[in-house]
Amino acid sequence: MKSSVPGIKTANIITLGCSKNLVDSEVMMRQLRAAGIEPGHDSNNPADLVIINTCGFINDAKEESVDTILQWALERKKGNISRLFVMGCLSQRYKDELIRELPEVDGIFGVNDLNAILAALNTPLRNELLGERILTTPAHYAYLKISEGCDRRCSFCAIPQIRGGNISKSIDQLVDEARFLAGSGVKELILIAQDLTYYGIDLNRKRQLAGLLEALSEVEGVEWIRLHYAFPAGFPLRVLDIMRENPKVCRYLDIPLQHISNRILKSMKRGLNGEGTRDLIRTIRQRVPGIAIRSSFIVGYPGETNEEFNELKNFIRESEFERVGVFTYSHEENTPAFRLNDDVRPALKARRSEQIMLLQQDISARRNAELVGSIMDVIVDRKENNYWSGRSEFDSPEVDNEVMIDDPEGKLSPGMITKVRITGADLYDLKAITL
Image (cartoon, rainbow, N blue to C red; front, side):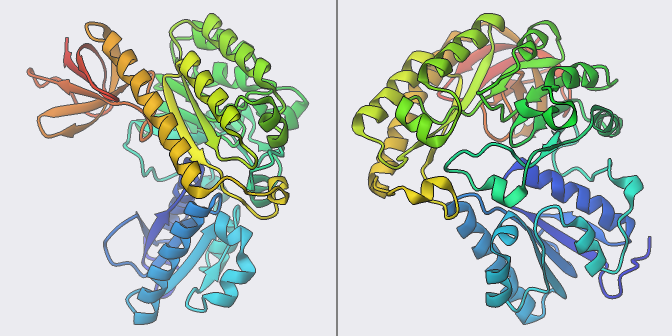
């Protein structure tokens, strides 16, 4: 299709931050193509228009976003690109500052500003395409964003001020999106939201994640459904029954717990104390035998003592989470915790983070060694040298373990779900052979 935008025939979308941003970029790319602008993603090819989809969550992410904007602003000044747009969380949060400091940028847009971006390109929003995307992930998996924003008020988090309150998509809308994705070859849906377990409360005052899982599992072509970012307080336990009984719902749960100290959890406004957190993890493991739990934790929160940090270490050691991520506390303006004294030194934050990761390495190595000799299903992602790289139902892309598969008979291809025998293990990854 010929571009309806004078001088703009190609675009390069640079996506920073989380998978929710990635979905926003994919939706925008479909709209651009409909306008006759051919989009690329994180491309090195020349383009008329560059759009940077920024992250503004914590300091490291903000610095990466600013550095990327400055890099492309220099290209704009040199005349190597025609126009430069900035969108997403950083520009939502610091729009006035960016406008003042970066005159090389042609347009600065916040989150949920797709209409305004298209208007700046003199092209309309095509509502009939809103369930469609151009995937930037491998063709066999995709992220499905089930809601926008968040109603929680965790003390350390700036997301509600950036993205607003929780707005759930309807089950019918999400099923339509899932059908489109399945029709494009997607076999694995990774459900994402800022607060997955809150889904549906704004629609009819009750949590509807379980009903959504049942509806999505009926979509022909979808074989795996994976849950990310489940908030622990108020967790809808019926989801666990579906996970146990429905073969399409992976026995995998990403549930950020952040800490275990009662004092810190209360200050963080997490809505669940240490004993409640322990009870929930016990319940999850009892109701879904063999489940893999991924969690993330914050170290160096204001006032975190050695005793509280050791309590967190002991909790992680006892719980033996299959997957763990660690963040050092970032002191974010306009959050409730910003009123506290950020008194844990950066070097101590870093040491505590390293201690948690070393502890988790031991847990991961031991758990992986126990899998040697077992048979499991894996989804094949890509070819790497003489091996295929895949994932079990217990592993999400980009962040979790991989299974390196020997395929002597040449049976594998990307997107296949196949049985393998585990033949070896290291700290994080497994080795296997096709059956």
